Length: 207
Image 1 (spheres, helix red, strand yellow):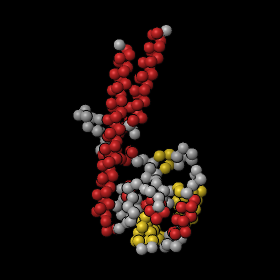
Image 2: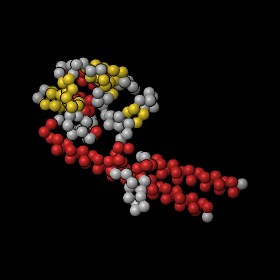
Image 3: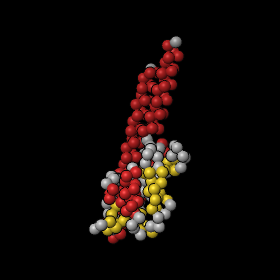
Image 4: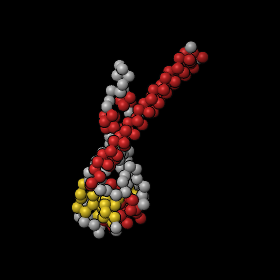
């Protein structure tokens, strides 16, 4: 009986060791090292794996990892549509996506679409748009961020867009990438430490 219990404990510890190493690292492939202990993937390859589109559990569609303000409360969405209906164009500029230049979009229509969890989407020309990356001329401001106008918080998003600041945006993108890679490598180190701890525990039980 004691031997079976010991085998069960050892099996459980081995499982936890593997589980920890996979869950603490965002993607196990990110942490692979060469013979010299250097990461096999380049920084850009790490970022590409990290920001790959995720599948929505409800409808199976891909979810943009940079998505911030696609769905919002009805009151905010109605205000956004009422403002956008008065505009002829907007600039779509996604800095976290690695873009340093915005895209001009002619506004032919602005409408509401059903979202999830009692939230709704704002669509431009029949397609949902992320208001975190939409910029319009608003009152005294030129190319003002729509989410900012609505008072919605965003991450790594300028409150105004200026096409003359491409060099500034490029430096900002490098900083975002640097922070992302540092976070990935920190998770890999945590994963490795957790695996070593579980390995030590397994050895202790066997002894």
